[in-house]
Amino acid sequence: MVVGVLGAQLASHAIWTVQERASQRARLDELSREMAYSVASTVRFFRSLPYDYRHIVLDQLRDMGGTRFFVSVNDHRLPVTSGGKGAARALVIDNFHRVLAAELGANDAVVAFSRPETLRLLNNEVPLRDLPPRWGQHSLLTAPPSQPILVVQLPLEDRQWLYVASLLPVPEGLDGRHWLSADRLFVLLVVLLTVIGLSWLGIRSATRTLARLAGAARRLGDDLDAPPLGERGPREVAASAAAFNRMQRRIRHQLEERERLFSAISHDLKTPITRLRLRAEMLDDPTQRDRFCASLDELDRLVRGALDSVKGLDMHEEVADVDPRRLVDELADGLRLQGGEVTVEGEAAPLAVKPLAFKRCLANLMENAIFYGRRAEVSLADGEQALRLDIRDHGPGIPAHQRERVFAPFVRLEPSRSRHTGGSGLGLGIARHILQAHGGRLYLHNHPDGGLVVSLELPRPGLQPM
Image (cartoon, rainbow, N blue to C red; front, side):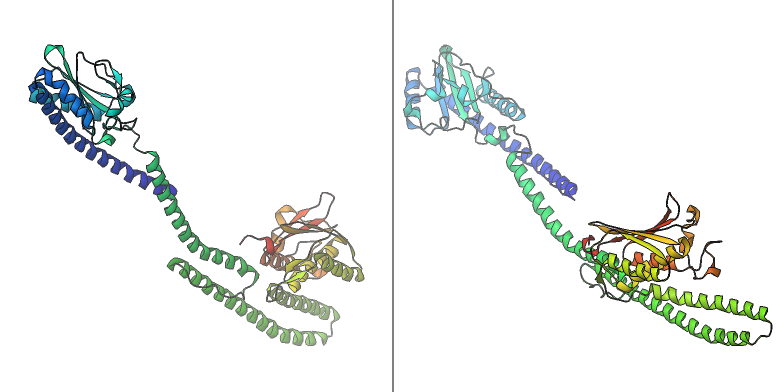
């Protein structure tokens, strides 16, 4: 946007400059020709005067002050130091030569530009600044030092030279300044900064709604029951907010339907499983009875696992501050009572999470470590941006190509991770879903000394960028 605005300003300024220069050139052409005619009239007037009266008239003109021309009659042609070059000066000099030649037949006129500090006057070549005080009202003496002075010298009879010096009425036409002067550059920058400032305010107002939309999208993963986003702002942003709210309602509705579906299925399956179990108990063949009961137990575990999966994905609870070290110690004490060996290291500041869901996540991971690796080592590493928690067991570990597969529902690796040893293969999947809902992540890797390490990273919500 800055490049676009600056380009438009420079283009418009360039067009304006070209037009302004053309206008100044036309005005300079007209005024210089008029001035040349005035000089020609002055020359004719002095040529018509008797020789003895010329100096008297010159003295009277100088005493009057405020005259347009400084005129003198010299006995030689005075040297003129050039006051600069350029197309505008060449145009003025050319006009003077043509007019003087046409009006006076003077083809030997000397026309040049001089600067005030180098201008010489009279026979003794007096500098302009050294003129007598009684001539102080002359326009040449009040000219700024940077304004060029036009000097015209024509030969008269008796080897005399008529000397005429004057200021042009349009000195800006002779100025060779760069087209982007300091004052114009200042105006250009003021306009640019004003446009950029107003545009920034407008864009900031529009993107503020987009920031709210982005924040709502981040909160959606943590809480589907968050209040809907305000549908205001520019038309496109309001339409995006409305579409986001519709998406949130549909996701909430689909999850509710899924929960109802699983509840209905589990309820409908419990009755026939119980009925089949009763009939199996009445079989006379003990081998067949044990096989039927084992199959029914496995089916019952699958149904319970499905319910556990739904409950594990149920995140409808309020966020609260939880002490991670205290929660890990409580879970470790419970596992020790069941015969597990758990060691805990590290401390952590309270973390804003959904307590029951976070506890279920840690319980699944620590129980897996005890069940498959015999003992667990838990370490906490707290940081300003996130909390890291590592759970290491001393089991066989998991091959790299199988690590993503174990997060799928009802998947357990053989032979050590067999469904016949208990469980349903849902713990890792539920744990990772809970962490992702909190904005964290879970990944697996094998320890160099053996065993599996489950690493958790949980950001601190108060430090997340909105």
